[in-house]
Length: 516
Image 1 (cartoon, one colour):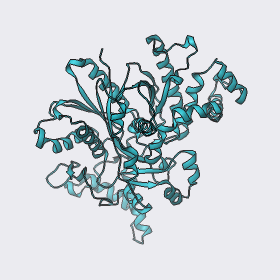
Image 2 (cartoon, helix red, strand yellow):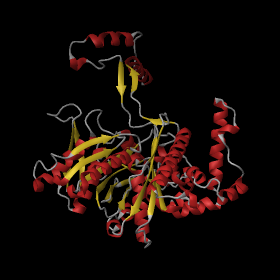
Image 3 (tube, one colour):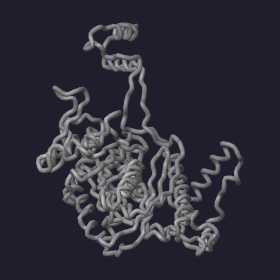
Image 4 (cartoon, helix red, strand yellow):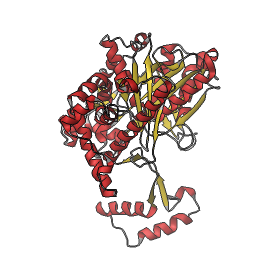
């Protein structure tokens, strides 16, 4: 039976970055804690002409060109994102629009007409879901049909200025070529899954009272020295809804719905959800791997020792090695190795050791967090992380969080690092652990293929990262606030956003162009 998997990956990241040393000085933060504690060196920042769609389209175009693909042979383009541009129209259709512009002159105006597109959203795991779905679709077609699918990921990980998440920002897009007999990784159909409905990180629809907006505007007027009559707010609210001329209406409703790219989140709780979800998905994967015969616990095999590299979702570079001690612990319980660790750091806490109450649960969680940190400081775990996780962190350190793409950036990071270090990865297995807040985790496995080097040689990930343009704090803030009205670097050899709701277009309609 033919195997399916990842044939190639292309990555796109903005040409702009904000150096973490400059960010720390700007915010009065401790650079050493950000750099040595979390692994942060720089954050990728989208330019004025960049958005979710352009980053995804630029990556997809890079993938198509590099592999000489006829667009009419692409059966689907599935996008994983949590930075969608519309509440109804898939962002994937904007990406297709740009690709049609570029490839129609050579392949015809309907070269993408029979391609299926859709967005998948589940926070940072959306692209893994899109890939899981596309792998099934390719496999179901059989090797004779030779289906080709492209999974795109694109996000702008943006947080409120001055918030506790600001230093983890990043942005970028990517595209993954899925087909039979892939050159990079085959992915067996064994998936560990863990889903639980929690509010650790989300982007709610926010409501604001019209009265509050008017009051705030009038307060600003008073602060600037303007005279405002008493009762003016009530008079305005009475007049506006009864106005018969649409162009006179400032507010049509008593409440306004506001969309913000920035999330609501609880960082500490989210870390716990991440750790628990990945551990539970790992347990599910291990049970399925035993049934499939890929793993034999009877021989005291340690599953995570079978994976030469472990690639996980990285909201910041060191998140993997900070959260993976839970899996490390579970995979070694009742073995002589774990008894040695317990002699060093003491016995682990269990929920039954604490009272069955909200206070008891909180005490257990704090004790478990502390125990996780103790595991991470043992020599056994340090050696484990250095061998299996360290190379996955390198690109994340230079880009920041890519949300749905961070796990695939980590995969490219380790494969290019191994390529440059002349490590023979052929036939080796790698473990992959995706996570999305809300919360879901998926654990799966990849087998490195004999031709992986010829594919990886064309990534040029770290070379391209070294050619970016640093911005200063004023440029950073103006781009973040949306007050800047021109690009820092003019678009060059890329797709770019050229207008929103221009004359002759519908309200909010987005227009894009390719710039040579």
